[in-house]
Length: 503
Image (cartoon, rainbow, N blue to C red):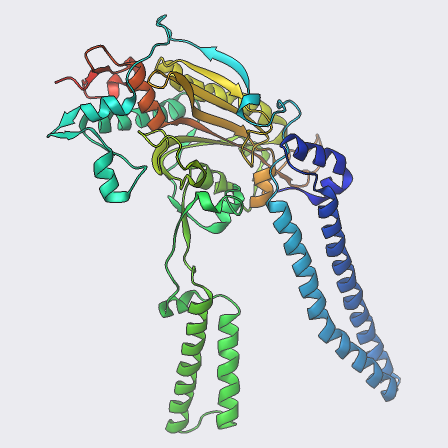
């Protein structure tokens, strides 16, 4: 989320940042919308000040026994009173439109990000080969290995069974492969918590709209998400929000006054009051249901970045608390709406996958260093597994929506004969923090008072994607006899199993 004040102060820099992403300049339209908002705010303030001033004059006129003037002033106050709600709605609508426009604009790339249109503009930063001196080779793809291994007559890597359960882009792993997946996740968690200083978190797998907006999955990428929803029912009355409660109560009060005129006195009166209350409540329940079809909508997390980053939403942290470092091993869910026809074979692009997520919350002056640190933590996973990889600095046209700067780690996949992304580590600056209202209070200068709250900086990265790590292990450690050697780093987690697929 962008700060309109900064855009007003330096529109040229803002437009240049958008153009580096291949987008059209947008500052003029945003500033014009902000002018409309500011005009609405000004008109509202003038009306409120006039109403308050006239109210004081009414008191003075009455004190002077000038009833004619008092009546004239009262008419003007009444006019302003009826006019203020209209101005409030105008101001509210102008602000909502500005916020909507700002929410749909991606983050501005950092000054050291290479400019480019797409992945071809990415810049290689480093390359890591096998520790043991092995060469990058070729071989079978992971699904050729996994489907050939059998347990109880069915494949250890079973896409057909998964399709019967859930459709395409799902997989069932059995036996040794299921254990290997679990071992990879546990290994990553142990490494990040015991050696890298991350706190393990077990977060919810379903989150509200506000959380998805905070990390910028909404509203721009709604088609890439899976939503769960339960339609509102009459039993949801306990959770009514304004204005339904007020409207129902007001209608009950008016109807009682209309039909009884006074407070109930007889048993018949009390029965009538009960009937009125039930009738009105039922009507407003039904309206509530009709107008809130996604009353209980929750989103399946596309990555644990969403709940982990939102742990600090709507809060003011102490500078002493930062940096915060969280990690979680969770299932992740993505609709892959923009990936039709891509990577349809195997486990590379699934609707459900497991990932070890890394999230950091820092101060602005330490976020760049934290980005390098996070990258090193993710790299260490692949180094311990002795998998060849390279690190790419993404160009402006290939970065994610919320990113200010991104490093991608790409692992070698012998079956495809190419590198594929296995981790993406991004620093987002205060882009997400503004959407979440996540702030911290800077340390005071010597002898001074604490500074005004500032927005934190957020970072997220994969530490790493478990499914793709499993693919990389299978393809890089395959043997001529069709088995796969278990990397030494995973042996403590495999219960003595040293080879996958051995009879």
